[in-house]
Length: 288
Length: 249
Image 1 (cartoon, rainbow over the protein chains, first blue to last red):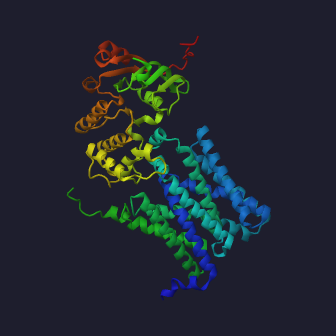
Image 2: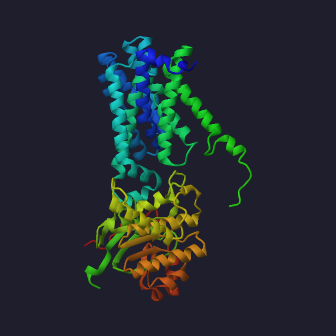
Image 3: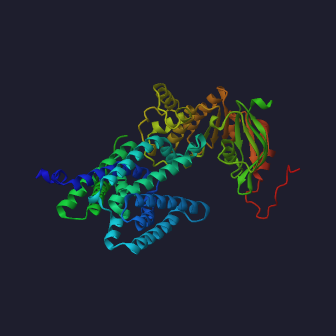
């Protein structure tokens, strides 16, 4: 009975690779997702995930399903859209969410069109939903590098990142680190989305970022704990999603995100910090 | 007063938004160690003046000269601009005051921990260390921000309406800190509305209504004719205003 939970990983190499891949994604994506959420940029992450598509698609057009070409293309497109949306909202009366929505719809349509120019529907599915069960050495190396860089960069930027969320005016009055911090953070978001894109595709990559982050908010009100919980939820979702896909013969990417979604729903209901159950039955009030 | 002892010098400073002046042709200096209140009607440019001193707003014209660098200024803006929902403890919020020493990466040494505890004690927030900032009342939040100011240990302290919507007890406690800063020869500039408090505590006052109306010893500044003059300031700007040519040779 118990071997249901680990036998597939012991037996099949592609399952081991998939597990290593999702653990790497969870390690980087969890903390980045927490900061996106706290900076009220959850939908920015979503929009940027779509923005990666045309870049990756151009890479695909040039070199087929090649890891470096699609990575470089995706990074480039992600950065362009992040900067463009920022500029539009800064210099016109359009708010950032509206300009991001415009850019992401444009990117998604453009990306799907570009892939269709050359590829089959199988390739299109590959780009949109990823291939977590077919991660080769180079892709694993890329995912591991991205999560390493992310964790190191966040450790360095932690203080100005937190300060910029809580009290941007104070940060501006004591330091000029605010703008570079914001830009590097956007860079980390794009990097993690490109990593997630290889495993989970452009439509679901952001799921491993935002679902664990949103769930963690229901369990703790301490930001360090929130990042840890979020990483943990990401790993558990990846592991259980892979098992679900193996035993029930479901597509792996969606199964992982469904697992993360299930954790989110459970957290929403049971979470000790503002979960629905605790809101509905808070118990009698205290003395002080 | 010699230029060397001025903490902040204004040379014909005009501050504003777009081309509209909010502070118009301010000239003069705040001596080091002064305890000065900035008063005036709403929209008179008081907050704008502080933003200009701290450097987040560049003057449209003129210069603001500081004795030290801008990092020697501790600035408390109007409280509403802090994200209170952020999952941060009171301790961590207050510890940010050590920024100029710890910077981006530096750790917090044991000696600093003692200082943080002392600052919390000085504002009466001992025992609040682990509380999330979202659970603080308005007055407690202001106490925490004063503790952060204490840790910043700056020679110049700017306070923007620090006692608005704060109860009498908290105001009295925080006002004691302001007096303590004055005794320690720090320069304190506070935007205030309570003229009785200004008369009791602040030796010097700048009365401003876009244009500086009066500046000097508090009893001289807060004369009825000055206050009347300040109250007559026209808040709405004139859509057909001409270009200002004052001081243009």
